[in-house]
Image (cartoon, rainbow, N blue to C red; front, side):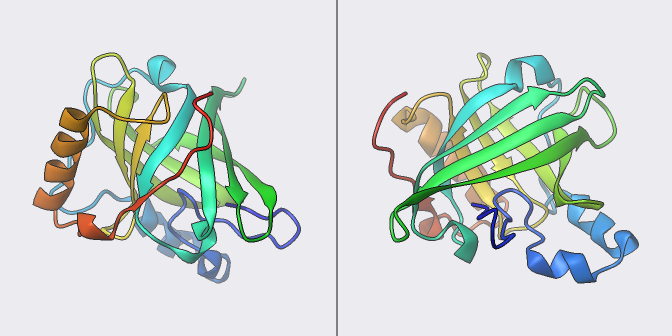
Length: 187
């Protein structure tokens, strides 16, 4: 999560701090989707908005030691999406939060977004699977290093978990590396 004082964040950015040093042209490659993956179509952004609990994630240093990780998506007046990510750092004993912005990549009917926490630098945010009621989602970044399983509650049914893991594995994700996020409440 983002520590506002130290300006660290890549929860769904995938670009990391190195993005600041790169050109906007190069960063556009981070708005891609992993090879062989397909984003959900049709996609209903209004149903996707709201609060999501992180069930699992691929490991990376900025989320190390975090539990109770959530993301809240709200529509801004300019049709961009406010992204509010939050998690509790058990080592530092404090909440960390980062506010970003997301936009639809091309077609609003396709679940491909680009997310930024670094001004003009965006990264891919691709919903690869979602249930009919928009309660569970499998989300990929721009490559096989970024993957999340999300839920509207702090758990996910075993059959949905199995389905999402199989899809991720078929795309080349090493799902044995997933970190299963701990939650202290069901909110």
